Length: 145
Image (cartoon, rainbow, N blue to C red):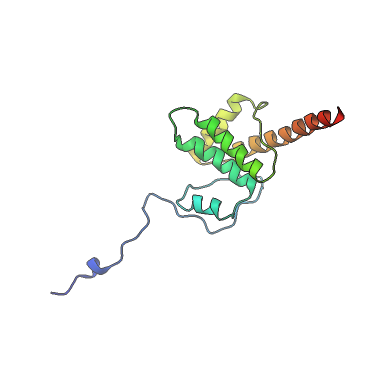
């Protein structure tokens, strides 16, 4: 008896609930909101060097916070990993000392619920700029002695 066509057809390897990665390049820093879709290719993209240090640090920060891999300390751990990525690429670590905690939480919720990084990206950039100024000011005082 011949096999039916449906039994010889190759099965799809992708899950219907997983969005495939977009083929376009990384979005520019325009005024439109930056959105991402979490895909199985994300980890490969980071390890293949297709993203810069800032993109890796930002995405690691929000995605580790989002997946909640630990019982406690997820956001603290995500900030440490983000800073480790920046330091590994010879960039200044970020201190979130001056950010309004309500703005930080709203930006995270916007990412969690709408997959929109625009507000968190703005906070990330502002805090990086602040950290650079503070660290260089402290370093120049150290050299003055």
